[in-house]
Image: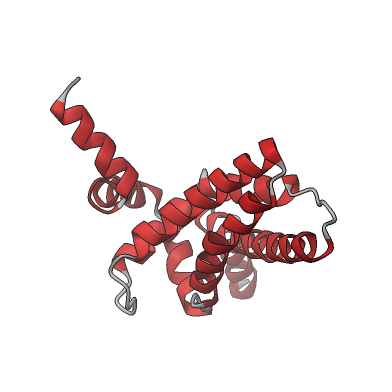
Length: 177
C-alpha cells in the first residue's frame, strides 16, 4: 500500500508542469546545439565547395529558441550564475543571436558568400558559450522554467539593465520623440 502511494506521488510529480518545463528546456538546448552545429557544417561546406545549402531548418530552430521561455531561463541563469567569468555574457548571448539572425536574413536575400562568412563569428561565439554549459548548469537553468512567476519578474528586472537592446529601447522611450 505504501509503495503504491509512493508510485502515485512519483507519477504526479513527473506529470507536474515543473518537470515538463525542465524536460522541455533540455530538449530545446539539444535542438539549439544540434542546429548551431549543423549550421556551422553547412556554412563550411558551402564556402569550400561553392555548393549552396538550405539553412531554413536551422534558422527556424534557432529563432524558436530565441523566442521561447528557454531563452529567458538561460538569460536569468547567466545573470545569477556564480561561476561565470564573463560579466558581459548576457549581452554576448543576445547580441550574437541577433547577429546570427541578421546575417542569415541578409544571406537569404543576397546569397552572398560575404554574408555567409559573417555568420561564422556569431556562430563561433554562441558555440563556445554552449560548450561551457554543463549538466549541472542545465539543471540550474531548467529550474527557472519550473518557477515561472519568479522567473518572469527576474527576467524583467535583469533585461532592463543587461540586455543592450532592451536597455537602449527604454532609454529612447524615456527621452521621448
